[in-house]
Amino acid sequence: ATGLGIALDAAARGLSVALVEAEDFAKGTSSRATKLVHGGVRYLAQGNLRLVREALRERAILLRNAPHLAQPLPFLLPVYGAKGRWFDKWFYGAGLLAYDLLAGEQRLGRTEFLGAADAARLGPSLRASDLAGGVRYWDGQFDDARLAVALARSAIARGAVVINHCAAVGLLHEGERIAGVLVEDRESAQRWSLRAHCVINATGVWVDAVRRMDRAPRGDLVAPSQGVHIVVDRDFLPEHHAVLVPRTQDGRVLFAVPWLGKVILGTTDTPRNDLALEPEPYRAEIDFILGEAGRILAKAPTQADIRSLWVGLRPLVRRDDVDSADTKALSREHAVLVERSGLVTVTGGKWTTYRAMAEDVLAHCMAHGLLPHRAAGVTASLPLVGAPEHGERPLSDAPGLHLYGSEAAAVAALP
Image (cartoon, rainbow, N blue to C red; front, side):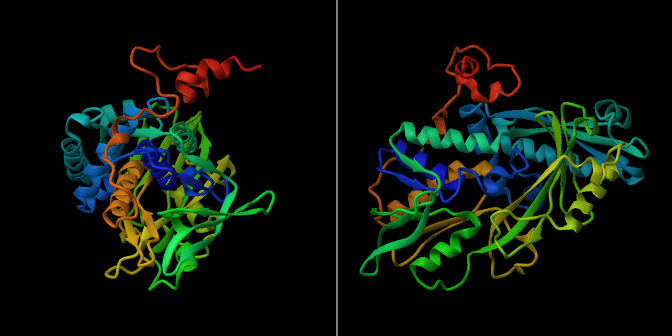
């Protein structure tokens, strides 16, 4: 997500851009999200208003620039028990009203306080016993893998060279300064030297491995965290809204999200340092998700109900004042580091803020004299490939074809 966003922003500003991807686009965490484009209710509870405000602004921009890939989605937050009838509903409701206030004119819908009867009516698949009420609010949903492809194609349309299955295997130096990248075609094993005035390391949880190609770093930037998502059949949540459990046994939130005819349940937050390309879930993580979902769904899912699952590694930025084993306490904010050699590294962040991260990275590059100054903000109103133009017919309702937006007819016409 981050590298593709940077490639598009740089190309849109008229810079000469090459992006190399060792695997396929969105192979790693960028295709293993909860499929939500959101401000982050949990970050609001942590008091990180700056991150929430930025994410809500970027949410609005993404929904405007890629309406075929990102749409508003209503959420129901149920509360249970005698305490939930009063304290929880008003506590969480007040927080979500603040969420609306931070979004301002860019809010997607009105937050509503629900009594027990309305919560049961809107959430018939929720556990009915002891349901005290709830709160309904709005956020966004998107297709992460297809958005990555749209970013790649949009960058190519503006002159960028974007290549997958081509790994960066070394860094080129002139004296102490970075002068380019040695890349290898994963199919032919052929190697090339790409010369560049500026080299950006946007490899997520693997940024420290690339930093070690430059020189021995002072310490790792990333404390990886593993997030597991489980997919079950739609009959567990047939409604047209998602469900948010605001407080799980480990202090996180849990989502149940309708997705392409199924339901996504997740996620977890588990430290993981082996950085596997295909990470596997721990049994305890699966049990945790199923157990928490069973607490609020009328029909509790079991191991036998799992249709698929995926695991993503979050590139959380280490902090000196937080134990790196406590990944829940680490912020989702990003960090940009410019080494003495000129290597620029960016890590952290999340899908929702990919565009703002790209702008920040390029601002650092220009401030350090690695790139010529070009005006920022060009991607704020830049429709991505497939976005319908003003006055164009509504997006296709055919299953799956809506993801192609204005290209849906061309796809449907394929033999």
